[in-house]
Image (cartoon, rainbow, N blue to C red; front, side, top):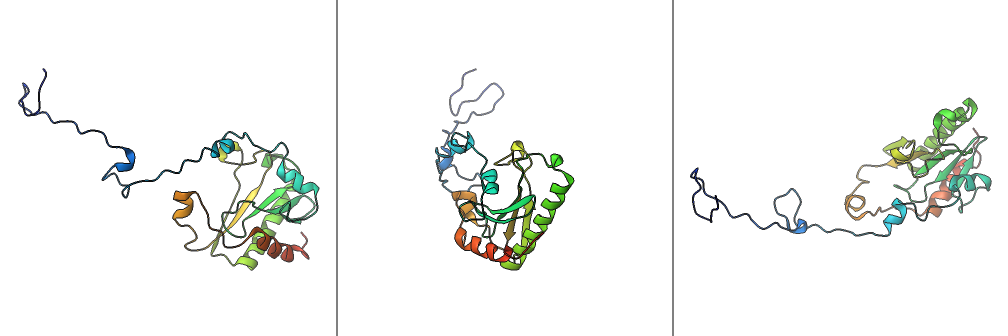
Length: 198
């Protein structure tokens, strides 16, 4: 039965006028604090779809060359190497990588695995002594579906953490403030590793 505003239905209930839907950015009382801004980044689609993906493995390129700021490699052992992260989460962010191009942890030889773990420990010690972090994130994204940016070449991340190092910038603006340049970070680690051997 058709009804108009203020008229009664057969059951005796009044109908209410349906409010016009509001735009997301104007929504009130939704748990969001007022108007929301959206950062449109169409250039990110190239990364997501891997349109501009490098044709060669950047880790393998680094393994073939001498230690240098260009490759961000600060240390090599017989089977592993330590690189700075080109886009660090925090100052001092390191990657520990097997020299051999391999994407499966279980496919490492015992010798490669032992060396890799020793270098992880060595890098952790270097970070502790240089940066004196309150804590660290240490781990590996094993495979593309786990979030590995370069899934065909294993790599551990070690990230120094301090109280208050996470603010609204990375969460809302997609921007991270790092208090040290890559050049400064590189020199600190290079000095530490120059007389160290696994």
